[in-house]
Length: 88
Image (cartoon, rainbow, N blue to C red; front, side, top):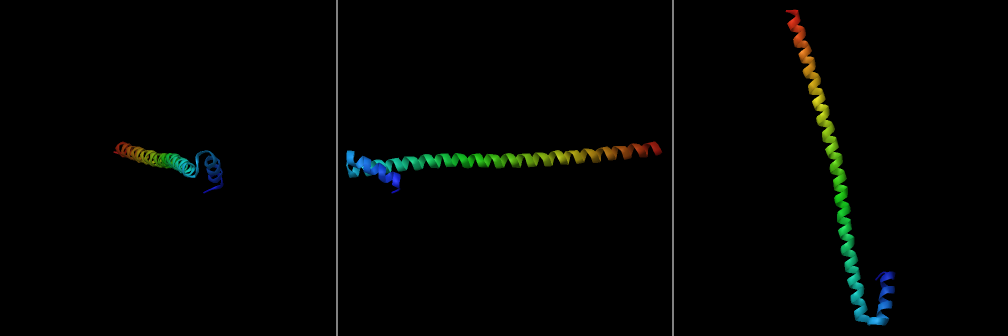
């Protein structure tokens, strides 16, 4: 037991008895551990969301950059085609 658990146990032991105090302390430990794990899982989910957001931004930038390059090549091709038409 940790110091705070021992203090709680000793306080409860004088009022409830040793077995009952131990049961209460164990129940509180279990409840706190379950709550901690629930909050920890939520934090992991938030971290995953942050990573996913960064990945979406990275892919969006890549697609926009690719579309920009494609448009530049299309414009250059159109200019070359018009220049060839004007020559003939």
